[in-house]
Amino acid sequence: MKTIARFLPLLAALTAFAAPPQLSIDVDARELGRSLLHSRVEMPATPGEMIVWYPKWMPGVHAPGGPVANLGGLRFTTAKGEPIEWKRDDEEPFRFHVTVPAGVDRVVAQLDYICNQPTANSSGIDSFGNSLLGVINWNTVLLYPEGASIDAATAKVRLRLPEGWRFGTALKTEQQTAEGVSFAAGTLRTVVDSPLICGQHFRDVELTGKKTPPVFMHLVSESAAAIQIDDKLIERYRALVAEALELFGVAHFESYHFLVVCSDQLPGNGLEHMASSFNAVGERELIDEKKRKVWPAYLLPHEFVHSWCGKYRRPAAMLTTNFHTVERTKLLWIYEGLTQYLGEVLTVRAGLLTQEEFLPQFAGKVDWLMRQAGRKWRSVEDTATASWLLRAKSPAWTQLRRGQDYYDEGLVTWIEADAIIRDKSGGQRSMDDFCRKFFAKQPKNPPVAGYELDEVLGILRGLADYDWAKFFRERIEQPREELGLGFLETLGYRLQYSPKPSEYAKERDTDRKQTSAGASLGMSVADDGKIVSVIPGMPADAAKLASGMTVAGVNGRKFSGQRLKDAISDSVASRAVELLVLDGDVFRTVPLSYAEGPKYLELVRRADRTDVLAAIVKATVKP
Image (tube, rainbow, N blue to C red; front, side):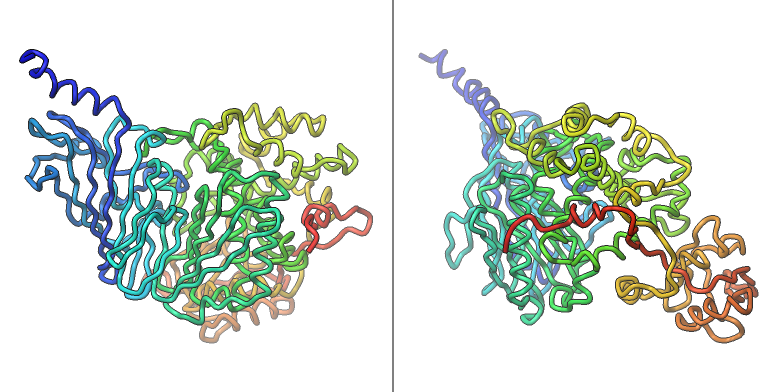
């Protein structure tokens, strides 16, 4: 009997490791207004060295962007509060070595987290707060044991908020009292995939349709007026839900939650989750129609599509069982590019934009892509492989470096694929058919279903007899001399230059506080005169201008955006535009050889072609 008793502690330790760990996470958010979160994470342990991780490679941002640098305190104790020694790994700053004392079977990690300090790669997975609202991403206040599968390990979250604050999240509320709220236990994947927004001014809107699962929009802002979106807009979001369910034919969530923050104090952002999405727009961008029709119009549709494309179906090389294994991202042109395409299609089908409003925005994307000189050395696939290195915008010569072009070049590639399917099938099949097959429930219905490119090609071949491998190889996998605009003709359109900017272009410049002259001089200039960008091969480039220089004068007068526009108009007669430029601490007079007046690229219908684009964006659900 004594011999058996002697081995009982060892047996208990082995059992603890064999069973999936169960964590408890207690988060105190009452100091969000001071940019602080506090958490207590309790997890099973065995005596000896224990390795724990702070989440590093986060789904959605496709980057090792876990904001570990923002820890403002980290302590390990026993469940009784006795201190435990720990050291950070010498080579991996997200990895911690904890020395668990004999007889201890639970370890507590106490974390203090500093909010509002995002990097380019952590913005969507960071936590934010001020005196009126907050955003909590659970990965910022979490540690988990090495070796634990995020699909097997579970966590139970409890939260305390400032008095009077309400919240929205995809997590299921189990109990709510004056002391806080408890959520039902879920896998680590589910918990981390379910952020929470909260605040004093909060509104819930139900978007559930006749044939849809329950869908809700939760809005929070520093301003009570900012979340009072009108009934017409609410109906368009209901149409978005209905159109998405019609497109995909199935939902992989029990309910869905649009988490919407309307604030000028938080960075604009969007991040996908299986049963929710985080959407951060300017304070008045949903109640000001002009502002709403620029970026916000596309934001919620894009993130909603991700529930299917990226969350349920994900490239196999990006599917990991923890938050620290490297993701291989070369297929982001499907994950993000296809989502970009489908999101924009649904934006128009739902009436969030009309086709007439969509065209100038689409033309603007084509214009931008046409001027990516870096295409000659860097393929779209390489922008995906190097995704997180390119997330932060280059301060100069971005067209030479390229950015995350797999989004918009993915979009134009997939719209061309849709046009080809429609053409080859005589209008009988389309990308809608691809979506219903590719995003259908997979055998055994896993939480995330991985895929390889071959599966995508096989479904496309079943829809249209075409060399799809060559199609994507030429457009995605290889560098190209130019974008190639033949797809516009297939859609029934052509490009032409207009002397007047579209309403979208004017609103975009107003929003960015700049004057764009990309199609004419090949440059953009901020309202304060600082050159924002110079396009290779254009007059500003030929005149040796560069980002960071400052335009002090235009044609002998002090600079303003309007005077630059006037000078471009006058160039038809004067045959040049003369700038006074401050280059460092040296002024120089710079003549630009240009004589074609204002130029803005636009898409126009070809009378001799079928309007395939209209068929693509036509609503499929009757009001």
